[in-house]
Length: 320
View 1 (cartoon, helix red, strand yellow):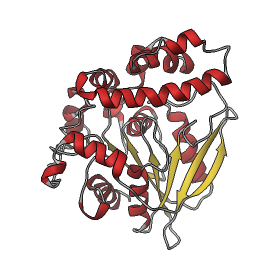
View 2 (cartoon, one colour):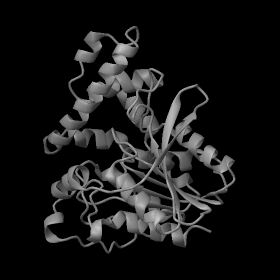
View 3 (spheres, one colour):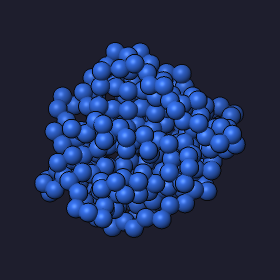
View 4 (cartoon, helix red, strand yellow):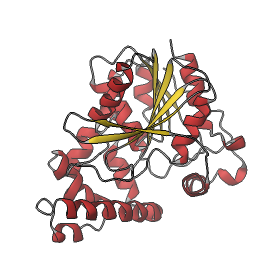
């Protein structure tokens, strides 16, 4: 489809990408009642799912995936869940392995291409036969997982009607390079601090698989992906991981109506993360590139974000 012209116009002080990103990540608050469910995966590990419901019985469900070091309580997740709930759509916010407040059971955990766990959640939702329409919405890392899932499978469950990917680093090598630039140092260091803390717990859990020397050698996010992400998940190195898990190469194969919203002032994204050619050549792929919004910072009126309202509009018009 042709690229969509965006109508997003934030207040002048939120036109700054850094301000909108930081405000959305650290200051925004959402009140939402959630009910937790734990599902057991095929490898005997677990995922914790946080459910929130419409006031009326619904046959529609949105599955929400968070970003790097996020969880089901992040405002960019609960904000979307609350908006969908108020429009008679149930929501399930997925906590990736190890992100629900309790370490997962395996040495490996989650990464940008871990589509099997998304499939497990979809199959779980389909199996209860309650939902005839399922929508997928992901932010950042979670958005890449959704795009990869839709592009790599010959068949997607019929219940999955549409998808929305927000602030998606669909070209992982380029996005990783951007995160190592000085302009993103604050973000880089914050991510690395949280990842190393979690990895320290993993090292104590599996001392035979990760040494203190290896842990101490991690100085950058690239180091983290070389030392842990690649080794733990069966990739040769970080570059192999980025290459194999980038969703960009799979966008031409997506058959489910899918909306990508990537802000042009998102400092995390490289030029390749704006797939204009792919959107123009795939009738199922819609690309919106607002001038503003930073990384998942599409601040709008009354604490409802532009990307969340656009997601609701998209599923309403592409949910048949």
